[in-house]
Length: 125
Image (cartoon, helix red, strand yellow):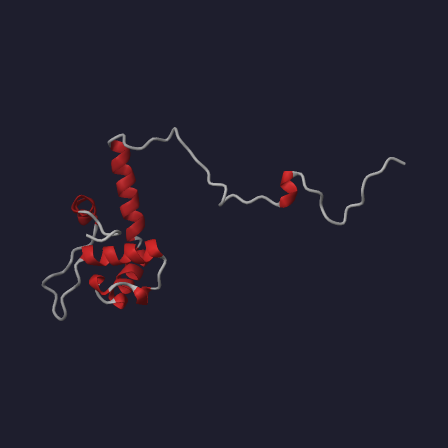
């Protein structure tokens, strides 16, 4: 199992939330959802272009097309909401703790007390 791939336990949680795989469809058979999800997670986690996705996840265009379709249909939001609801029912979420990363919250240099440009020095006259 590669670094960014779903474990069996993780995939079993997601499997009922995914659309049916359509094995009896005419034409070329669909790539399994698990393989597609692993490819999607690899690209999103590494930040690499879709075309650089390893071949073990299938053709990059197929993975990208399914990612785009699922995103457009709101599947990822539905999955996230379902997982959050399940975690709340099982009391697995802790809302007492919060953290903020300073690399995301930006303040202007004047917020730290620095002098602003083009301001005359105040003098008592």
